[in-house]
Structures are given as C-alpha cells and as structure tokens.
Length: 398
Ligand SMILES: Cc1cc2nc3c(=O)[nH]c(=O)nc-3n(C[C@H](O)[C@H](O)[C@H](O)COP(=O)(O)OP(=O)(O)OC[C@H]3O[C@@H](n4cnc5c(N)ncnc54)[C@H](O)[C@@H]3O)c2cc1C
Image (tube, rainbow, N blue to C red; front, top):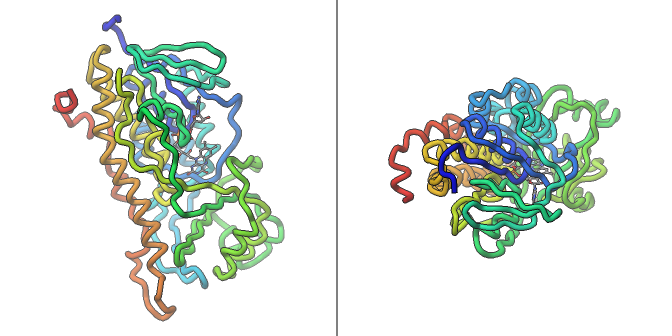
C-alpha cells in the first residue's frame, strides 16, 4: 500500500455526526472521498435538538458560520423547572446551562449538509451500506453491489448501526431502559393561542420542564418556517399519553391532551461498547450514535458527535498514512471517558428529576440545586485542544 500522501476517508451516514466528521476531517487536511447515506432524500425529521457551546466552538474553528445555527435556536434567556401537578417553579436557570440553543433537528441538519457541500465533499444519497470488510485497506459494499475502499471508514450510521456489529464481532441489540418517551411537534391552533394560560408558553420563546415521580414533561417552542414535519419511528398512543398527564399542571394539560399525534421514541440503553474500532485493521471506526448514544436528558448527542469528529481528525493528523489504525485507537481512548461523563449527566438528571418529589408534601421547599441541569461544565472543554495536549498518546496505544 502507498504510505505516502494523505489518507482517504469514507464517511457512512450523513446525519449530524457524519456531517461533523466530514467537515472536521476536511478542515484538518484529510481527503473525504464521499459521505454515504442510505436514504434517497432527507426530510425535516425529528423535533427539538440541542447544540452546546462545546460543539459551536469547534464548528466555528472549522470555518462554519455558526450564526446560521444560533439563529435557528430558541432564544429564551432562561428555562423553568416546575412541579408536576401545579407548575410551581422549583428552579430557573439560563438556557445555556443545558444545551446552548435548542432548534429543530431538521433545520440544524440542513445547515450541516450545506456546510459539507460548500466544502466540495460529495454526499451520495441512496447508498445503503450492506457489509464491511475489515481488511487493510478496509472496504464496504452497497446494496447496489458496488464496493468502495478508503484508508479509513468512519461509520456514523446511527443508533441502529450495522458497523457496530462488525466492530463488536457480534450482534448488539438494544436493551429497554424501562422508560417510554413520547414526542410531538406541532403548530399551535388559534384556540391554543387564544388561551391565556397557554399563551404564557407560546407568546415568546420558552423552555419548561414539569417533573414528578418517575415522569417528566419537556415543552419548548421552536423557530419555524411552517413546514410540517413527518414523524419518524413509531406513532405513539395518544390515549396512553393522556392517561399519563391526567394530574399534570392544568396550564399545560390541555395542550398535551389536545395534541393529535405523537411518536413513540423508544429509549434504549446500550451498555458502553468495549471498543469503537474494528478488530483486525483498526480502520473502521464508529462515531456518534453508532457508539455513544445519549439519553434525551443529556441534550448532548449531536454535540458529543461533533467533539468526537474533532478528536478523530486531530489524532489522524498526528500519524502517517500507514499508522491510521493507531490514530483510531487513540481517538477511542480519548473519547471514551469524556463520553461517559456526558452520558452520566443525562442519567443523573433523569434520576434527580424522577425522585426528588417522591414522598414530599407541597409545603416542603426543594433546594433548586437538586433539580438544576448541570451541563455547563461540559462546555468549557475543548476536545481538539485536549487531544493535542497528549503527546504520549500514540505510545500508549501501540
Ligand atoms: C430521523 C431522526 C430524527 C431525530 N430526531 C431527533 C430529535 O428530534 N431530537 C434529538 O435530540 N435527537 C434526534 N435524533 C438523534 C440525533 O440526530 C443524534 O443523536 C445526533 O445528531 C447524532 O447523530 P448521528 O449522525 O450519530 O446519527 P443519526 O442522526 O441517526 O444519523 C445516522 C445516519 O446514518 C444513515 N445510515 C444508517 N444506516 C446506514 C447504512 N447502512 N448505509 C448508509 N447510511 C446509513 C441514516 O440514514 C442517517 O442519516 C434523530 C435522529 C434521526 C435519524
């Protein structure tokens, strides 16, 4: 194999993680041959998604105009954490303490795709990867039968990743978390807008959480161009949702009860993967939800995928073309502990929210610190800088 020249990359999956990987690799001088996605076209899927300052700073460094995505985001200065049954505000804190800006996933995705195209990186749609070969160099095969090869394949193929099976050497089916999650996103009706109680949430950008024993509700407004989104995954049972909110704060109850449809977003756990790198060549590497999915309460899925993209690109910049397998293992070594911190933030918040009001009467004052979102320390971290400051990393993984 030619060990001179710059290594070539194929990115599988053009979600936010795949786009971030392509942009980071390009910024660090690597050649991205193509970003492949199995769908024919992208629709405006999903609903609210948070992007944190930890991701913004990297995107800005890579030459992306982050103002474009900041403008998409909810501009509410604060968010309110409320008691389940009467809406009493238990804590109020800056919106930036959670996820930076919260915007529609589809709008963020459109912007990320635009940034990839602006860099001349080809995005190949309808390219369904059906198998991988863990050889040196690695290759993949598409449903069409076409085979593609590059020095490194970065698999950002999401929560139902095919590449993860190759990396682990076995199937890895998700385990139910024991929690249900129903999501809905809709244009408020004129009747809702006329309702003074609801108008408190609709009149301007807002973010509110109602917390109760083993349950919580998240409400936020999204900046919208009126495009009606398609639902993704399974439709949820609105009767089940209505049953769950019979005793919630009346101010939000009617809005939830009159919601016509929702989707059932299964929250599945995966125990942390022992490795993110293919066993033989070390040249097929996982990134994003394929290896480090987060709970919704983390509000960091897309931001951590962006951090991972930066670290992978930096590690690859430290080695020659024949050593890319060392760089992928260095990336895994750096990212694993950081991801665990971010994932456990989400688990901790869910547990605090679901437990704090158990067996507590209305007259008991709750310390606001017990219910606050504590993501802020995650933002100060510069994942690329951290990678650059580990001069012995290469030795550690060889
Ligand atoms: C449709 C959809 C809606 C979402 N909505 C929300 C939301 O509202 N809020 C939220 O917080 N998070 C949402 N998420 C999750 C969020 O986007 C991710 O947690 C985060 O952005 C990290 O993304 P990722 O790129 O790792 O994975 P994903 O965003 O899941 O992207 C994976 C991509 O890989 C492609 N792919 C999968 N298998 C193959 C294959 N075999 N060959 C080629 N391509 C393949 C998929 O088509 C997809 O485009 C959503 C994800 C999806 C896919």
